[in-house]
Image (cartoon, rainbow, N blue to C red; front, top):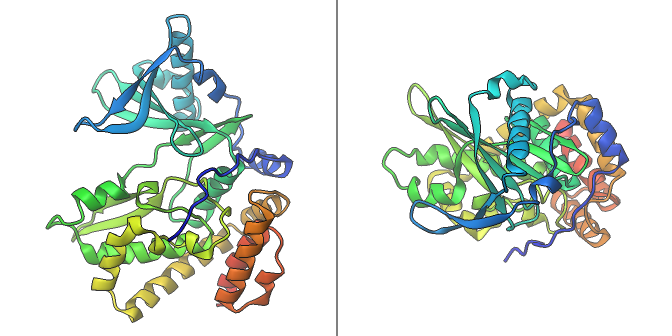
Length: 340
């Protein structure tokens, strides 16, 4: 059984990471902070359409706080969507502010609604954690997806990543006649490879979403991580491989049923090749990020040593065994793509 460190420490972004973020325009002056959002007056449990507890609370602010906070949140939404052009917020309202005490980041989820057509969107306000920031940045550089986020002091702002939560996809969509199971299996193999190469852990089914896009012949699928708190933290190699989580068993079973070993190897090589191309295209940015990570502490010495030993054995490469930081291990993992 894989055991995740549920109480991962909070790692404050250090000087090297802050310099990197400032250089790449990830640091902005925000009109409100995570701490200010904690000053709500009361909260009530948020349930889904079936009346089940969602583990989120809907928080409410008194008349002395709400106008200022709602205006600030709309202005943050403008920063995310229109580089700060607040004229687009005139017909927008903050429909709901939700708070989740489950997990490491304890996020606020902001629901923005358009008064004219009731269309809505979300974004998140979280505590700025170095592990998560490294994970977001690596997702932006190495995955097929671009990520919009920025921070100010202890506050982290993230865009909403659209998709069907993996656990819900399994329960409600996987066995539908229109679902292309072969393509789902293919994407799970690629997602598994992406997570392992960039050392993103804890990819259980509720920590990623399935994005389905209708193609001219059939539906294409992409699995996207939404939780980056376990970037380069755990010591066990298998915790970076989604295939080993019991929550992902349905996807593993699909892979076994529809893909033979040769095809799995093909998809793994395809994904490694794509990651290598993105890595080479963003080499300067990646190396600067690794410089920050190698000088940072986002795990324990014991976990770092364990992962170094396990990766050394996995790759039969002694250079991993001599690494002393998670940044060194990640750099070695990515540089292997250029050699193979």
